[in-house]
Amino acid sequence: MNYRTRMRNLREDNDLTQREVAQIISKSQQGYSHIEDGRAELKIDDLIKLCKFYKVSADYFIGITDKK
Image (cartoon, rainbow, N blue to C red; front, side, top):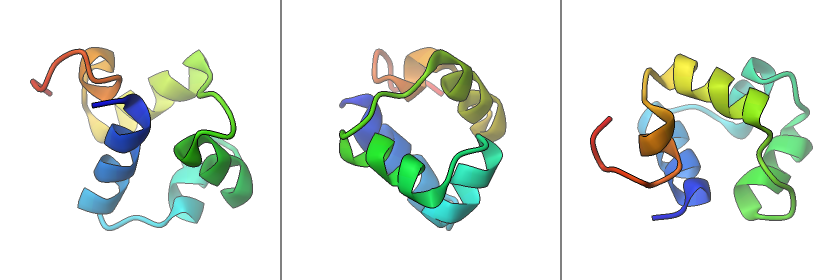
């Protein structure tokens, strides 16, 4: 599983909109959407913020492991 799929799944599993998650990483909804859709890359600082928010490891987030 790639990180974009995991990113979308985590957001949807937590019943969050793209706009809500975008605020967490200080992006616009459009900027977040571009990351989730593959039109932009996820920056390491944003990865860290998302991992902390969702309480998952970076290895889980990027698809290296299925263990949160």
